[in-house]
Length: 483
Ligand code: ACM
Image (cartoon, rainbow, N blue to C red):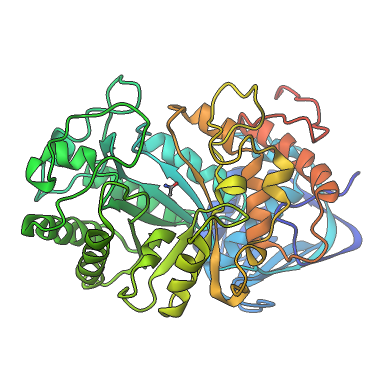
């Protein structure tokens, strides 16, 4: 039997003697949330003590776990449930592809004895979904949450507002979703999350140890908000279904703008158990420099009062008046454009850290090649899989090292896609490359070694029904129809 492989690559792995035999009679025990999640995947029974045991205590490093497979049983040990969950994802990948079927039929699966010690390089490992250009209903978001959990990603950033639509109910400004949510790119109606919808996304993500990071993009990318409430802008706005950016701006010198920021952030912070709230700040091309700086100083001060750590796209680093600890998200290229490195370093100088999302390698809405039926080309595209793999977050901006990096995130913007199928096709396999960059150590990372492991993961995606792109740089296994 060939050794099953794991993505992201674990820190260390040694083989042992013999196999554990997993059958429908195998029981799962230990930490209840992870034990019941894992048992639920395979339809196994749960008890206080099981042959597969998830135990608190004994992590090799923060966020890490130890996984030991022996003929008598399987043990996963970690210091908290989130790290046990990461161990559960590793264990899942040690099983045959059929374990990923929506309703697996257990046979008699041999899991080769092994000892894995593993921990993440970065604490923040994210995926971003733009639900503003096209709206994605709750069920699609839940499916994406399950997809990204396989890769040990632990943050889902939802880009909730943009020129084309406002997607989250704000009770004190009801027309945001009244007028502001009925459009999306290309027409066909929009959509929005009521507060209970949103709470359901947050709850479901938490059950996969994923924290939702909501983004309200300010002061540009606000056409939908201004169409709903004309006093929020200096120039009138109409509902918009195009894809050009950079034309909208909140009215910077109007007090009602700051009441709006306060209300929106307060209501969103109330819906957000996680520590982070993203307030955009990118591409404010219709806002003068002075106005941008005045807005950022005031809006961040208001937003920070609601108790969250703020995140902004790197242009927000133009401000020297950020609340201490504000996180910058870099979306420039792997060779930074004019000003982008300085703007990103500004967050570090103001006590914050940085999330790396370099657009030419980590924006997964960019086409794989010229023939991709969906996707865009603007970010030095196309972006074939090896490009998404062959970069390092500590090698982009001189002066930014691992300890100043909060982590890595792969956005998917949705100008050209409207369904979960199209989303999965663009995200996978490239999201596996980004997840390995975010989790695994730098040393020894090589595409030639990654590609065969990815083929194994592809067989599991096939079993799960994840419609990934069979890019030519990988020798994918033939798709077998489930029995
Ligand atoms: C961005 O792509 N405008 C963050």
